[in-house]
Length: 426
Image (cartoon, rainbow, N blue to C red; front, top):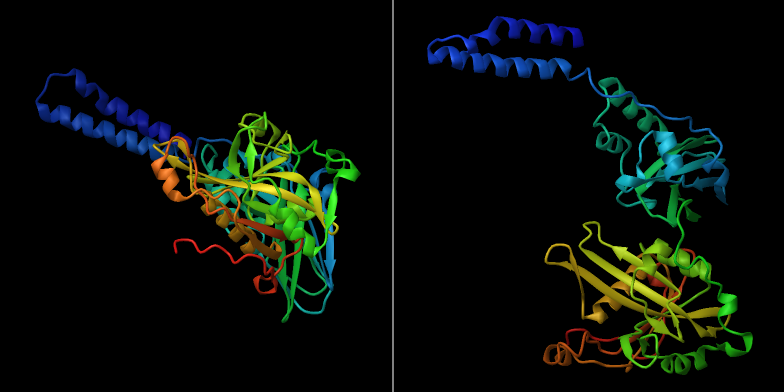
């Protein structure tokens, strides 16, 4: 095909290109231009399959990411999962998928039962990429043969949906990239059965902002108080209302959420609810908020798929425990795009608080919830009347959330009979 295209261009050039240098009627010139356009079109078509590079990749069974796989078993179903890092992904697929926001998750499912089971891909990522979709996104620059090889490889390495009795199947699911810790579910359905597996895996090459945080060294043991259910309400009411500047003298934004749970529970609940970690580098570039005499212990964020809205949660470990669980004070803030690429702070901090609560609720990450009223109320009228001096407004409510490491149905959440929840807009 390539040699045919070259010959075609050469014939057209020799026969017609000279007409331009001869004197003749305008029709000849128009004919020449027309023939030149045809030559370009013919050449483009002829060369379409000639250019581009071959598709090159490494074997999947190379040592590395599969050795880090975590395995869980429920009844007759066993699931192993791991997440290759950016370099490992590029090696296996020959493409920098992370640079496109695509992250493969490797799964292996063993069906030791006597009935067929089905893996639900949407349980791992509701908006997952199909194998051929990923290949199509990367078709540019490859030859026709290279594109065909790529499509074949992505399709062959995809995780199968069905696993027959006594069978072991493995493959990749193409998810949206989450650097740092990757939290996801793997739901496997059988005959009137559901097996749910929750994974929290560390992805190589990412340093979260809390990497050096050690809860055991923040407070001496004699400074940490443990409260039972009756004591907890009063203890939480007396917690600081707001973050401060570094001096501790100037109040900033309200503490509007309290999280109760151990570190692993907290992390799993956040990730399963769609929140992502912040890198140490990114956190260092942001203005810190202070509480208990120190900057926040960690920052997590949730960004819309369009990138036009970002919710941010900062939290601090408090010198308090609810029974055996730690208490964390949190601050939820919302930013949205305004005027192009400018991010603007949303002064309605109650909206951010309520959004966070709903994310945990629909992430099935809540064991119990309770509301506390009356802390640092700033009426909306104050914001509009004193726009410069009042950067936010709030009803003063704080929500307390007991987090769950494993999924909890919304109907099973324990609602504490503390203060009645706020009635927004009424």
